[in-house]
Length: 205
Image 1 (cartoon, one colour):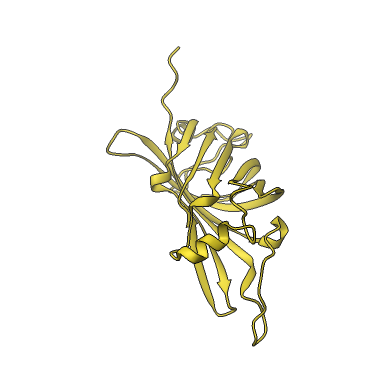
Image 2 (image 1 turned 30 degrees about the vertical axis):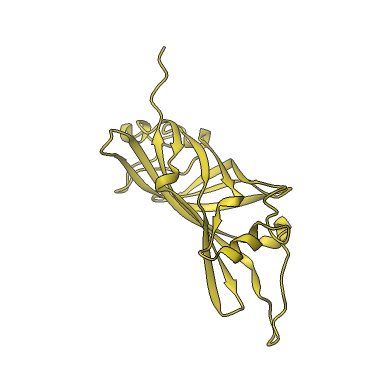
């Protein structure tokens, strides 16, 4: 996934620019840490307020190439049954056939296809988002938050970003009309990503 650089205006590799060693050092395979990552959403409710929720259970991997960011990739799988909006009845409705139909389609997935550097530490990644039995392209603007070694000796990288989608394009069309006009649930949904990933140790020769 070509969406990482280095904070403090670090250089990014181009055809006519020398590779920054610190950036190249980030090259490797990473596992997304679900305990320190959040995949969430915001949707307008009854035309006047927002409902926020998240998917508690998810897993994924990143392959970062510091010398050639375009060769990087990402894969994320989300457990639909782990949806949590803070209200049990609402969560049950979201899991039902009216919305995600978690029993038939237990996973939501994203697979990156292309990415680009759009300035400073901001990157744009495009991939395939699959919800239920529908796969459509999704573009996410991401900010690279830096890298660090944690207290356990793990090398981490962090990203955050968001994207707006129309849920109807993925077959999520349930709604209810309001007496005062409008609908109960907006079609537009904001997806938010706050990702911390741990670098895998090199395999032994």
